[in-house]
Amino acid sequence: MAYHLPVLLSEVLEGLAVKENGVYFDGTVGGAGHSEAILQKDPTVRLIGTDKDGDAIAEATRRLAPFEGRFSLHRTDYKNFAEVLEEEGIEALDGFLLDFGVSSHQIDDENRGFAYRKKDAPLDMRMDQRNALTAETIVNTYSEEGLRRIFREYGEEAFSSSIARGIVRAREHEKITTTGQLEALVEEGIPPKFRSAACARKVFQAIRIEVNGELEGLKECVVGLIRRLKKGGRACILTFHSLEDRIVKQAMRDLSTACTCPKSFPVCVCGKREEIKLLTKKPLTATEEEISQNPRSKSAKLRIAERL
Image (tube, rainbow, N blue to C red; front, side, top):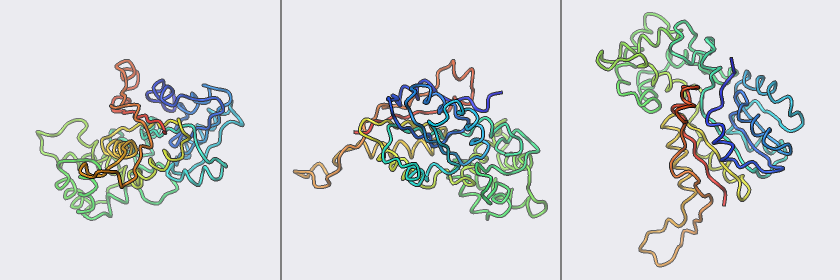
């Protein structure tokens, strides 16, 4: 089984418009499906990749071995791109990719605790297993209000209050340590008529986002990476849920907007200029054919921009 199937691969390659002697940054390298395709596109291309997951770095290193000398990988958060690029001696990029999807490997590995359908998996959910914070810590130590907040803000869960209340009551009698225990508690907190086979999905997403700090500094990172692009450089960003897509959309909109002075002003005093051109007015999504081959691509949205 493949470590991970790259989503919207042809669309990403077309969006990046890979150039001869170009330098590209894959901030969420995963199983290196996108990275491999970028390196295959032109024999003069150089790629720098980051990922917090040690398994992903190991798989990417193996997969990219045929391109020795043309790539370098760093086990770190993509938000640390400035330090990585400084270490690599890179001032500006020809393009970058951020793919915010959880990899198939992470979902399918029962020891990682990302999937609620794996009943006896430990409550972990760390993308970087060097970090101390786990899903188990959150579920067993966060206050009822803290749980309610992350379920509401990160999971957009309508029944966040009753779910949080049920978790706090349950842990008074028994520590919650498995995905199955958590799924059952989530289901209990949702009125019967609103329950479904996937009713725990939003809560699991919310906890995963909290564990990994996925939304913290996201907008600043997107803006910072775009400003490291050369003129004509391309940004490709794949999102998989509305929260991160909203942040990316707003960041790109701000950078693609010129003067923001009130219309009543006779001349511009803000000095703001367009920094990018949006190449996707609406995000690209997977085709029916791709969805049939890789159902996890269904929620993917790809936004592309070019540096002016």
